[in-house]
Image (cartoon, rainbow, N blue to C red; front, side, top):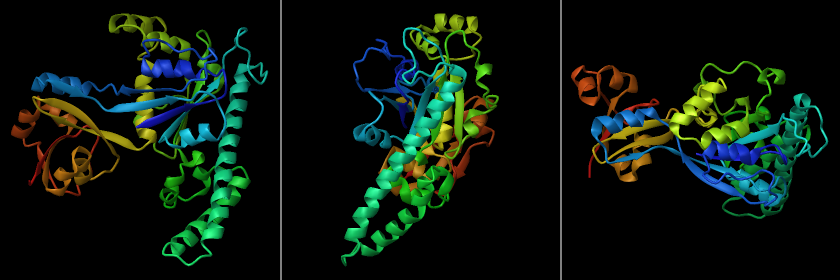
Length: 360
């Protein structure tokens, strides 16, 4: 999973990056270095800890997420890099700072973050419209020449012409293109089709209630790729939390009335927004979390491990995580007849513990 952190200057993007990645050498939002920051982090998953204990595994391999903190907002290279990522984390500012004034002189943080967000939305629409216009111009020239791909080019041209007017009216593609047509556009990396998570960055002493956001969701994992989620974050405080060891972190969070570091929640939201889930494999050599899309079949899950396993697929032996816990592990679940034999078309569930049987 790859997530790009984007936002206007001095919004706290790099501080958010520090909070999410636990950078051991914290990077400054205001250093003026203009550097790109890229790190991948392990997805916290207590299920792996339990499996490691049960199997006395020598190696633990959690799922991983790559975060990209862009160096400066705007420009073809900037948006080209952003398009390569599966989802976007947008950071907008809702804090005051005498040392770092708002770059557009917006003085009321309770409203300025909404204006900043509207600016981002407009920029994304403009970028997607420009890309469509360039592609239409190219297709109009090439599709006039008889080639093997002429039919496909004419179909693509018709689709782009059909979706262009909505962008001209300022409507993002996510709201104007039918879900069944969106996969046809995936190759372009359109910004207004990407899953979005918006973080409103507050000062340490600010009250999130002042933002007028809806109540937080009861279950982060219920979100899907078409949803847009906006949550508050105190990025500077969270970046400090990320630097602490486990014992100090728990105490620090309690002092500020926080249940957990923001990283865990953002990763859960990211999985939901990207339509992803994890299945688990375990043995004495390694326990591992594998990332697959929601609804993936057993044979698709097997392919995530190795194409040879998918090619020689015989069956999947599956224990749900709930049954694994309830019956004290794999053997207990098998003895309680909670181990299931599933075929290629079985729809994998989050937390399934799986052994694949396959031919050579």
